[in-house]
Image 1 (cartoon, rainbow over the protein chains, first blue to last red):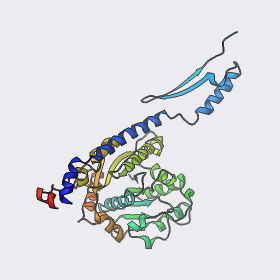
Image 2 (image 1 turned 135 degrees about the horizontal axis):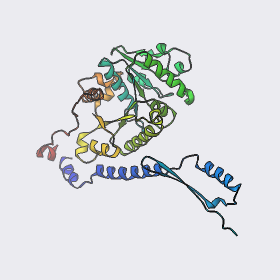
Image 3 (image 1 turned 180 degrees about the vertical axis):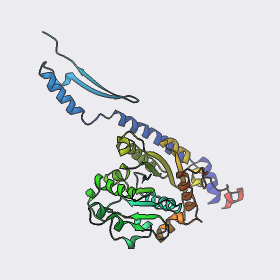
Image 4 (image 1 turned 60 degrees about the vertical axis):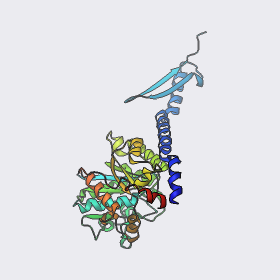
Length: 87
Length: 269
């Protein structure tokens, strides 16, 4: 075994580096996904906002866009409503 | 001031219970009144690792349900002064641990003058693991130099930072990375993640490295926390961990590969 392992070791791949690279990519992705995750209340919030707006203006579901963006130490709740054109 | 420390990892089989037993014994041996609680409801094992399995009468869930007092359930260690073990129950009811129940037990231990309360977490990220980390002031993340263990440690760190009581109150849980089952020779050969790699990936300060060692199995076979074996590298490494936790400045040991084999040894060895 001595002689063989001596030669094999020199051209064997460094698997530890491979492990490190894979983990760094994976964990960066998992962290990015988590920060993009919307809070649980978002669908309900969107629904209730729609109900209020519909008291005054008729809008479609697709005309309301709710988005949460995470900053360093603050979150931004972005709300876009496209009002129908006045006829 | 008492401190609650969770020993956790996400992944199973990385050495949480071995580390909890060693760490709690080490703290007690240094004169600090210490309780170690097994949170693995349904699959208790801390009692076995601590060698007190035949002395279990009441358990954690009995105390929470008011079926026994805390004093009745705590097992006083016969080897180390100041050390007490609270075993998990064997009940299969996962809902047995409630936030209120766990909190009342921890508060009672604090009132009884315990300096350290070590929470031995079960594997996974379900209720038992969540309860073990919820009240923690500090966390020891046990990680093996292996991809799945490192990834799971990262997940647990995320939970500590977002869902623990400290996080909810705007405080941070102080994190410590404990690498176990480390083989410096394999790191040298490029077949194992190095401690520097793991620290870089998880960005948690290192509190110690426990070398892979036969004495860990021997210790669990005999029900003696490995830290009490001060001849073994693993035992010594745990003693260092306890010292660092208590603020001592202790250099790492057992993290370098043994001297390279000579040419002839390589050829014929």
